[in-house]
Amino acid sequence: MRLQDYWGIGPKTSERLVEALGTERAVEAIESADVRALVDAGLHRGRATRILRRANGEAGMDVLATGDARSVYDDLLGLAADAALTAHAADRIRVLTPLLDRDAVEERLDRVVAARDAWSGLDEADREAVADAFAAYDEADGSDLAAVETAVALREAGLTDGPFADVGALDGDRLRDAADALADVRGSIDPAGDLGGEDIEIASGADAELDRLREQLSAARDLADSAFDVLESVRDGSLRDFEALEAATIEHVARETEVDPATVRSAAPDEALDAA
View 1 (cartoon, rainbow, N blue to C red):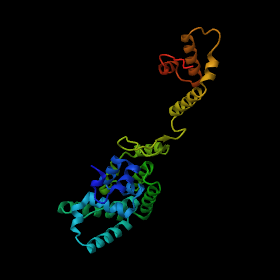
View 2 (cartoon, one colour; view 1 turned 90 degrees about the vertical axis):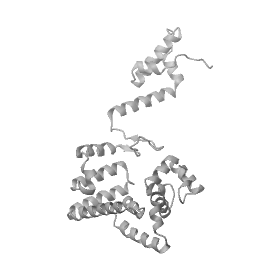
View 3 (cartoon, helix red, strand yellow; view 1 turned 60 degrees about the vertical axis):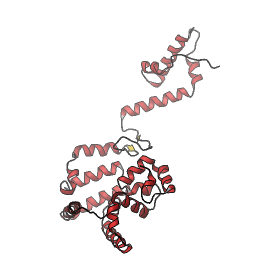
View 4 (tube, rainbow, N blue to C red; view 1 turned 120 degrees about the vertical axis):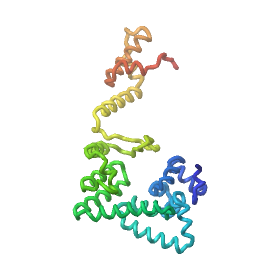
């Protein structure tokens, strides 16, 4: 689907979204009502909200036939959004549209009531713990680590059933392991495996094997930047042919980088061309 097929997205907005997110990610953000993604791409929050409402509930919005009706509806959602614990939750509230199906209306209401009852059942200390966890989530711009730490906080506060059943189904030990691992990750990990154009970086000291490979890579790059020095190091009067020179070079590279000689040999070119 073309971005300009969505209500409120013209050529300039489409160009901005493609430049910031790419077409596929922009469409995904619209279809999933991701306000933050559109705002981060440069759209005003109010405009992003209107676009997402139309994209995900146009029939419901048509029920609000007058400007006054839409204004009252916006005010109601604004009041609800003001009570949200996170900016993300507030955004999700603001993009809600009227439902036309009675069963869907009752299901949404049941979820809201269940969440209210779960919150009312917490003591003051647990409420503060949950609020602090969600505040940290917002401050971290909804990072992967913040999401995991929020889930841990919810479990520790006893929010594991009703609207929080998905959190309750998670393994607590694995969540803590994930938090420890993500603390060393820089960048966002897409569940689908798409890095979205961003590099994922693992901090030094997080994994011994990765650190070893980094050191080998650094040593190999140093050798690549000083190829003539390498040649001088391995060349002596006993090297009479190319095979001997190649073997000596592989041995030297393996020794300097601590890479297995077989690995070095497999990366070596089959033939050497003298461009001089």
